[in-house]
Image (cartoon, rainbow, N blue to C red):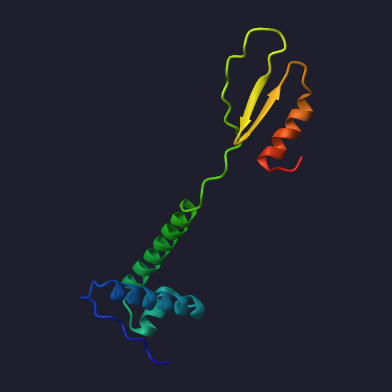
Length: 129
């Protein structure tokens, strides 16, 4: 198997950095498949054992950072609460409480059935009852 060309070490371009990472990922993959110790694999391939060990740690660190970044990019979950604006009811018996959900207004009078209210709010939120 022909050895892959290694990008020039002095180059700091993004392409060269990506090529170096890809090269070392391949080397690490080959080392893991070989079943050899790092030192034995390095000796066989003409690599410095310390460099192979450094890239092994570095690749794991980069992968962990990417996984963490991917988790942070997910949108936050929807809140479990419904914003409520409490308005002082007008004086008098039988005053209704208004629950505003988007463009919908639900007026609840004293003595309402709580289970019915839960079902109505579930429908307004788009949840199954």
